[in-house]
Length: 353
Image 1 (tube, rainbow, N blue to C red):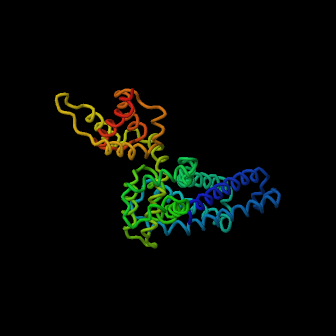
Image 2 (cartoon, rainbow, N blue to C red; image 1 turned 180 degrees about the vertical axis):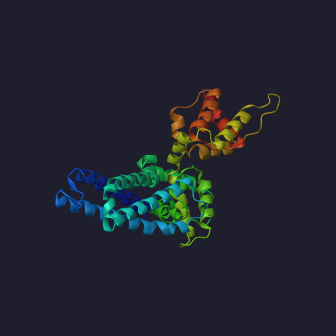
Image 3 (cartoon, rainbow, N blue to C red; image 1 turned 120 degrees about the vertical axis):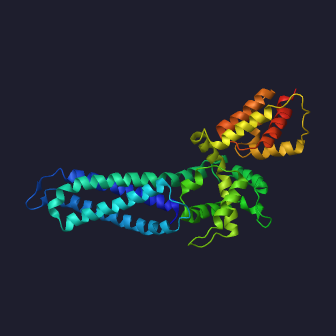
C-alpha cells in the first residue's frame, strides 16, 4: 500500500473513531430502559452509529491485512515506536472484539460500552499519531525543497549538479536522473519498496550527503527480502530523489540534533584547521581543488549565490561562517576539506579589496 494512501486511510480511521464515539456520547444522553435493554434515542441515529461502527471495523480489518504481513519483512530490529504502534494496533482489535461480544452475547455489560468506546478512541489517536506524521513529513519534504518542491526546475538543477560527484556507477544515466519522471519514480520506490523493510522515520531521520545516499540505497538493496528486489535503475532513482529532498532533511536535523557526534567532530576539525603552527610553512593549496570542495560541500545546504549576497569580509568572519554552518546546518566535512573551504573563502571574500 502506498504510504500516502495509508496515511489517508489513517485520517479516515481517526475521523470515523471520533464520529462514532461522540455520537455514542449523544445517544447515551437519552433515557435507557435497563430491563428491556432499549434506548429512547431516535432509531435513525442508532442506525447511523451502527453504520459508523461497522465502517470503523471494516477499515481496521483492511489495514491489519495490509500491515501484519509487513512485520515479517522488516530487516532491522523493531524500534520502540514500531513496537508501540503494533501494541496499540492490537489493543484496538481486542477492544473491538470485547465490544462485539457484549453486543451479541453479554448485554448485561452494556453499561461499559461508553468506557470501551472512549478507550477505543484513545488507542486510535495514539496509533495514528505514531504513524501518520512521518508520511506527511515526506510529503512536506517533497513540497518544500528548493524552488517550491522537489520537482521544481531550480531543485532539479541542483540535483543534476550534485549527481556526477555522488559516486554512481558509469552505466547510470546521470543525465536522466534529475528529470521529473525519474524523481517521481524514485519517490515511488521510497514509498512502496523501501518502507517494506523499515519505516519512513528510519529513512528520513538523518540527513546524508549525495554519496552517502547512494551508498545507503545500494547497501539496502542487496539485503535479502521477501518482496521483489530493487533494480539498479530503481536504486539510482531513489538515490536521486533522496538527494532532491536532502536539504530539507538537513534543516530539520539542525533543529533536532544540536549535539550530534558528527557536528562535534567537525567542530574539532575546524579548530584544528585554524590552530596552525606560526613557525610552520604554509601548506600548498590547490586553488581548483579548494574551489571544487567549497562548491561541493556548501551547495548541499544552500545556493552558492547566498554567500555572494552576504559574504564574510575578514578571516575571522570566514571562520565564524564555517562554525555556524557546522552548528546550525550540520555541515559534514573532515579537517582537510575545512582547510580548503576556509582558504578559498578567505581568498575570495576576505582578501577582496
